[in-house]
Image (cartoon, rainbow, N blue to C red):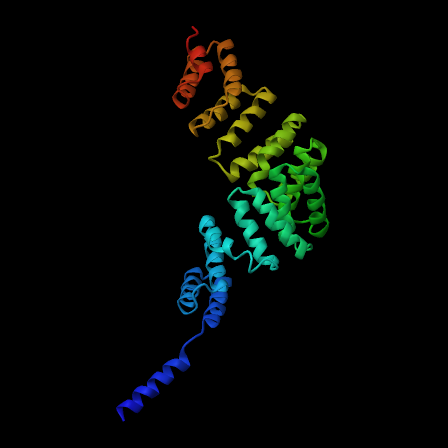
Length: 301
């Protein structure tokens, strides 16, 4: 009787056991729901039942990618290329990993293979465009971003990519138009501020640049580049008092811009505020002990 019960319990246990494929399927659901710890547990359990299961290994790579652990994701997924070479989503994910690691050559290779399989996938096209932009292939970047903008004209990141490709192609009118549209669509898009400020400043569009700086500082109040830019606009307006204040904030945040400090220092000396000019350069020297301009200025009477 006891033997019968033991056999019965074993059969019940076997009936309730999950296969590796079932565990992977459950892991995929957990991954899509953002439950990465649970997904990792299920993928790992699947590998204990089926060592080397490519779907489980790919799942672990996706979890690492979602967590921003790109080196780990690459280690998991790269050996699977031969198995998934006709899967555009796998190639897209691998290209994205290479892109985040700064390996744009391999990123382009993966994105191109994905593009050949699925040329109308905007995620693949934008990944390829961004990687080409980093590699300096501006003509193809503009072609791809033009297609993206025709598809989704309200996507700020597509305008940004198009604007930066135009900027690097010396098309300043096109660049300003696209980057301004990026900012209009999404004022929290941080990357747009520095190049758009540069375009406004060079075009002497002072009010537009000042408005942009105000948004920039509101978004990232501890970014010294924003305060530097605001001080540059103050100088362009002839407001040296505001420039001194904003440049001081830039220095407090640990950044130096010699030409900006030099202009303010000259104004302080002309207005017989030599001590304040010295104090300004002393702050510079604290941040950059080998700054030759600061040493030269501090040696003046």
